[in-house]
Length: 149
Image (cartoon, rainbow, N blue to C red; front, side):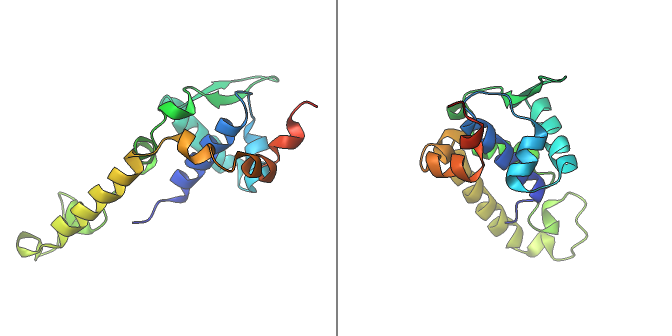
């Protein structure tokens, strides 16, 4: 199983926002913290907002916040929403051209593996990711420097 960078960035955005104490963050802040492209994050934030995971505010004092509490955001659901294609092998697709598909067990085995993978992710929320090692995550992402003294 391979998760795309798009989904990876989606999870990173949500981790950042969960650690940001409900304060608005900018795409620039998050891109800087992770050293990744602002253009990529703009697309990710837009899709997360369309999916109901984020709220965005435009303008000089605008930014991005989580639309729900971290314990209400299921990681498996986020991965499903952000991954364009969870077809592990070509025979998952209806238009498969593989001649052995009707007689091969690969499709069922890979399907079982995908179900197990997603079932594991379904057991976790965003809060599970951010509740331990919070200080370390906050420090690494530079969120401690932004906090008022």
